[in-house]
Image (cartoon, rainbow, N blue to C red; front, side):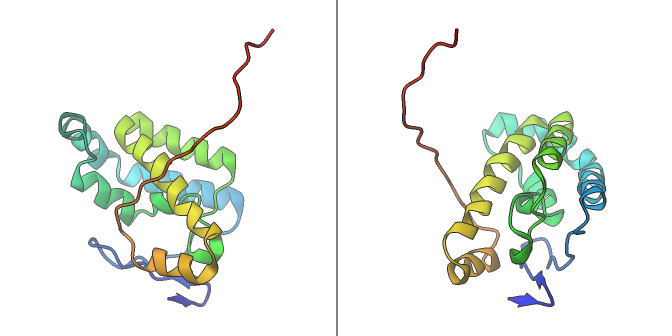
Amino acid sequence: MIECGKIIIRTKVKEMTEAFPRERATKRKFLLDAVDSISKTLRASGARSEESATLAPEAVDALVRTGMFRLKLAEEMGGAEADPVTEMLVLEALAYHDLTSAWCTMVGATAIASLGTSGAERAEQGVQEWPHTDGGNLVLSGRACRAR
C-alpha cells in the first residue's frame, strides 16, 4: 500500500510508516542514528545469534523496526535507497555492535532490493508482506585469473 510517497510495512513489531529522508547527508545521519538506537540490543543478542546459528529474534525485531532491511530498496517502494558509501558506513556501524546482524542485514537488504526488479505490482506485494523469510543466491560465471 503506497500512500503519499510512503509505503506502510506491517511488521510483528509495529507498523512502520516513517519515510527515509531524501537528502544524502540527512539520510546517512538518520540511518546511523538508527543503528545507534539499537546498539544495546544488537550487542546483547550477538552471542545468542552465534550460539543458535540464526539471528536472535530481538535483533531481527530491532533491524526491522529501524528499517535496516530496506537500506538498498528503492525510495519509490519505501526504502532508503542509500548510496554505496552510506550502505558501507551503516553496515560497518552494525558490525561494530554485532557481526551477525551486519551480515544478515547486508544479505537481507540485498535480497529485498531485488524486489524492484520483479515488476512494480509483484514488488509492492512482497514489501507489504514483510517480514518474510527470504533467501537469495548469487551465481557467478566466468573464470578467475591470477592478477599480475
